[in-house]
Length: 162
Image: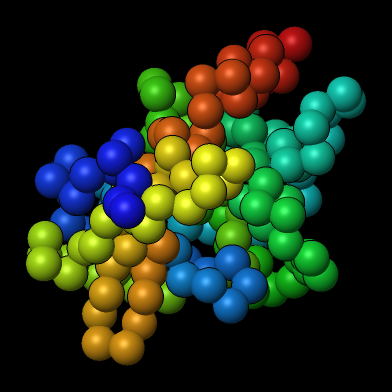
C-alpha cells in the first residue's frame, strides 16, 4: 500500500540537489538552496535540542544550523573537511543543514519518481516526497520544509531572536 500523504503528482520540482548522510543519498528541491559551504564552527545556544547545532553569522544574518545526521539518529558523526552545510531558504528565513557531502544535481522525470512505500504507522514519513530512481541509484526525496517542521521553525526562530 502506498503512502497517501505523498502522491507523486504533488512533486513539482524536477531538479534535486543530491547529498549524502552516511551511505544513503537524498535529494532536495534545488530551488530551496541558496548556497553550499564547508562546515565551520558554530555558536552553540543553550537549551536547544541536539540537532540544532547552533548559529552562524552569514554576511550579517544569523543562520541556525540543523545537523540532519543527528536529526536522523545516525551514528559515528564526524566534522571534517568533507562535511558540508547547505544554506536553504525556508519559510521566509535562511536555515543551514549539515550533511556528509553533496554529490550533484539531478533532473528527474515524473516516471523516475516513485511513491513512498507505506511503512507502519509508527514510522514518520510525512516529510518524504518520493523515491527517485536513476540507473542503479535510489534517492530519498525530502520535502525539506516538512522535515523542518513548524514546531522546529518556531524553536529555531526563538533561538535566533533570544
